[in-house]
Image 1 (cartoon, rainbow, N blue to C red):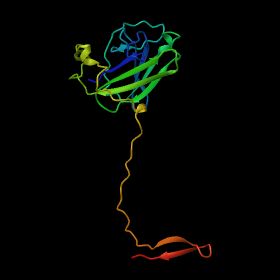
Image 2 (image 1 turned 120 degrees about the vertical axis):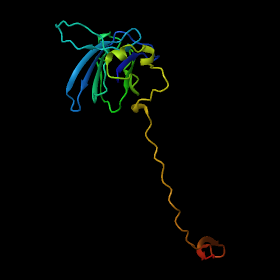
Image 3 (image 1 turned 90 degrees about the vertical axis):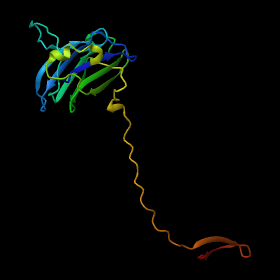
Image 4 (image 1 turned 30 degrees about the vertical axis):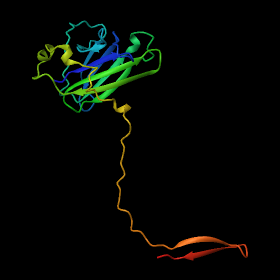
Length: 199
């Protein structure tokens, strides 16, 4: 099983509660196969998702862990503007190809009252055996998520460009060239260029 989770935090890592998040699972052509929604909890985490319900339609809400093992692409939309006017962004969206098997974690760090945020993605190897959602639901949360762990890789947008080392080629053979010396003739105040070959 490969769950997808999120965390919304401030610049100091403290979770922000009540941020609305929409998850769209897509096929390789970008067609939406399923759609889910959730709110960040008091720690800023989104571990469980609910089926997306259109306005005015009442359905039974059942929390679940979403398995993206066979989902090639997802779109995550964060709507911090619904939380309050302290966030200047109406929505923040990312569209990601999930090329590797494993759990996917997204960390959105919001900087209130300024125009900056950053979004990180981390992929971990699958930790739940089998394919049933029930097996993963029984896994303790501290084993499921570790946003402060050292295994998180930096965002590709923050990495420096790759360094290309030049290939050293063999030095060209040295040629024997005569040396030139500029001398000043003190008798007639004229300059002469005399060439002396050494060798």
